[in-house]
Length: 332
Image 1 (spheres, rainbow, N blue to C red):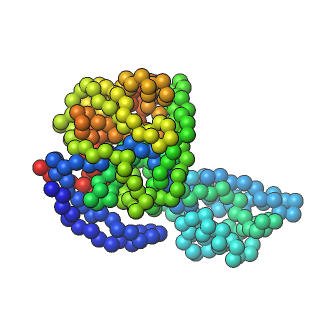
Image 2 (spheres, rainbow, N blue to C red):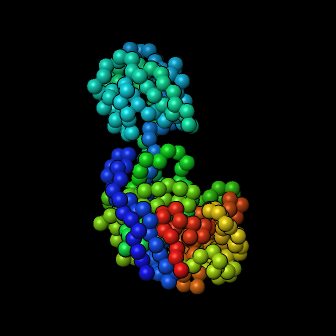
Image 3 (cartoon, helix red, strand yellow):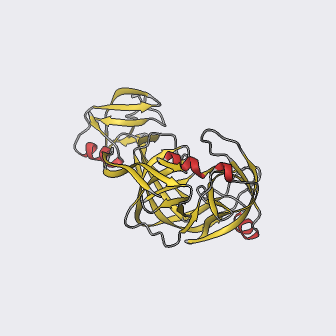
């Protein structure tokens, strides 16, 4: 039996959207299990990722030099106007000459204020700052609950920086970089089309959110789920994509189960035993995070990490921890 407890309309930092407050799921219910590669884009504010000298009349000027700004700082406002994207910065620079501007920025939990004077170039005005306003990557869809249009992916936090909002996209795997000594391999993929969902939460158990009308569940399978007290050592499988958009099941062995009373991303230790997966990827690679772990025909968790010493070894999170962070309550 499924029951919605509450829906409410909230104002997000940059957009409006519906957010699921809580959702009950019975131990006898089924969920849709993923395995599809997804593109992930998180908006985390304007981060300073580097600095450079600006050429002006044969002189190199460093407008940031006396501001106190460092790589890793986040710009909060410029000229007393709140900024969230690179476009916000560019818009302010277009409407201002090389007059001194107030700048507010954050480092960790501390905020600082200073002034900065843009430098005129042939292209306009520059602050001499390399900045980014989003983080992009590829992961794997773990689960989808159709009645609520909610999803979970990754099984681990993508970044511990300030999270504003984000989107997921359909992705196509174009290649595999094989692992080397002390270096994880990775899926190479590109985004296909427009966003298929919005990211509401970025927590230690992954990214969680709400799908939109472009989300396609045709390739998903519907399975029951099991909690950590119902799982055992031995045969299991992971469901993932290593070529194009094709989702496949690959054999693994669960070799260790941690007893956990609190959320942790390394509850399940697995070894890849599938010959095809070993040949194609060498085991577990980056981009497989979120790949559903299935045992006895039920969803039990998701892949989160790989051992850098042995790419055939990996770790997974119990599915109930991912449910919990999306406000999904398991009832008897």
